[in-house]
Length: 81
Image (cartoon, rainbow, N blue to C red; front, side, top):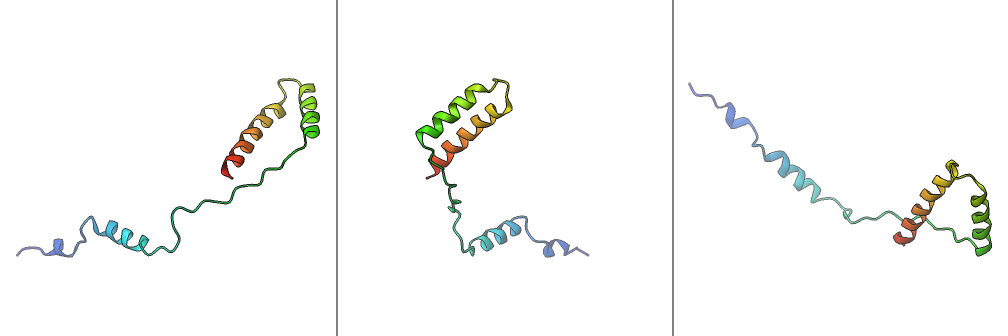
C-alpha cells in the first residue's frame, strides 16, 4: 500500500506566497520617514560664550566628547530637514 502523506503537506513555497499575499494588503507605504527633530538656533553671543566655557575645561573632560557627539546629531537633524 502506498502512502499518501506527501499529498497533504504544503510545498516549501506556500508560506512565502502567503506572506507576500498578506503584505500586498498593507495600507501604509514602506517609504514612511519619521519626522525630523527640531534644531535650536543659538545666537552668536551664546555660541561665543559656550566656546569660552568649553576652552576652560580640561581636554580629558567627558563633556567635551559629549559635545562632539551633540554636534554630529545637530548636523544629522539639519540634513533631515
